[in-house]
Length: 450
Image 1 (cartoon, helix red, strand yellow):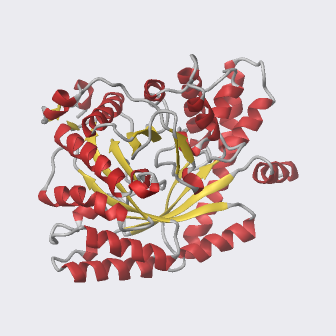
Image 2: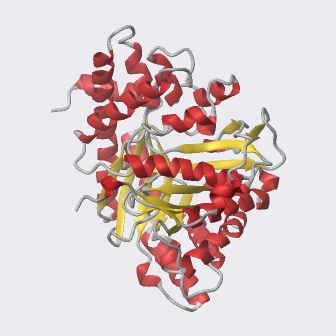
Image 3: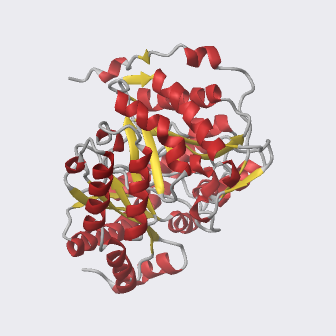
C-alpha cells in the first residue's frame, strides 16, 4: 500500500531535492549487422538502430510528463564496435553512422565505439582504437570506451600505452573545444556490460538483442536526508542513506518497468549511482561535507565515501530485483559543483581522487590536467587506476582531459552536464620507461576462483 505521506515525500524529492532519472538507455545488439563492405555495414547499423529506438525519446517524454519524474537523458548503447568492424579498413566511417543514428532518433548520446582488449589486441581492435581521435572529432553524440584490464586477465600494458597516446591525440584534434573529445572517452578496468551511463556505456556481447536500463540519481535527496541527522553516529547516517536509496531506486524501477512495457523491450537493470551535476544542490561532495568534513578532499573523505557507496548499494538492492551497471557514487570533478570548489581551493588533488576511487563507483572522472601532460604520464595514470580495479575486483576508469594550452589554475568549460573543471597538476616526474616496457601485468592470485 502506497501511503499519502510516501507520495508527498517523493514529490518533495523531485520538486525540491533534484531527484531525477538521469537516463533511460536502450542497449541494442549489432551482431546481426556484420558485413565486410563498409557502406553496407554502416547502412545496416544505421537502419537497425533507427528501427529499434524510433520511439525511445517519445516514450521517455511521455513517462516524464505522466509520472512527473524528470528524465534528463535518453541514450543508446550498442555492441562494442570493434566486434563488428573487423572487415572494414576505416572504423571511423562506422562512428559517423552511429552518430547519424543518434541524431535521427533524437537521443542525447550513443555509446559503444568500444574495444575489449584486457588480454590482447586484435587487428580490428587496434584499427578502432587508433581511429578514436578522428571518430570523436567528426561526431557530436558518440561516446567511446576501451577496457584494458580485468581481475581475471590482468592489465594489458600495450593497450594502456596506446590509450595514453589516443587520449593525447583526441585532445589535440578537439583543441578548439578545450579537448572535449576526451570528455567522451573513458578507459576501463573490469568494464560492465550493462552500464547505462556515458561515456562508458556499451551493450555487452553477453546481453540479448535489446534491453532498456535506467540510471537514477539523487545526491540532493541524500544530502537533505542527512541534514536531519546532524551529529548522530555513523550507524544512523548509514541507515538514513539506505532508506533514502531505497526510495530513490523504487522511482527508477517504476520508470524502467513502464519504459520496458511501452517499448516492448526487455527490462535490463536499474543503475542506482548517485550522479551529480554542476547545479547547486546536486553534489556528491556536499553529501561528504554534510557528514562533517570542512571540505571534500580533506582527511576522512575516503572513509565518508566508502560509507556512502556501501549504504547506497544496500538500500538500492532491496528496491529492485535487477540492480546492475556501476551502482554507487560517482565523483566526476567537472560535473559536481562541490568537487569543483574543492579542487579550486586545493583540497582535492589527483592523488586524493585516486584514493577515493578505491571505494567509489568508478574512478578518475572528468579531470582536467595541463595540456603539456605527456602521453606516457596519462598511460601511467591509467595503469595506476586499473591496478586498483584489478586487485580490488571492481570497476575503475579514467576519463582525463589534457586541455590544450591550459596550465595549472586555468579552467576548461565543457558545457551542459559536463560542466567545467579547474586544471589540476600531475606529478612532474617521468613514467616513460615504465610505460614503454609493454607486455601484461599478471592477474592477482585471488583471480583463480574456479
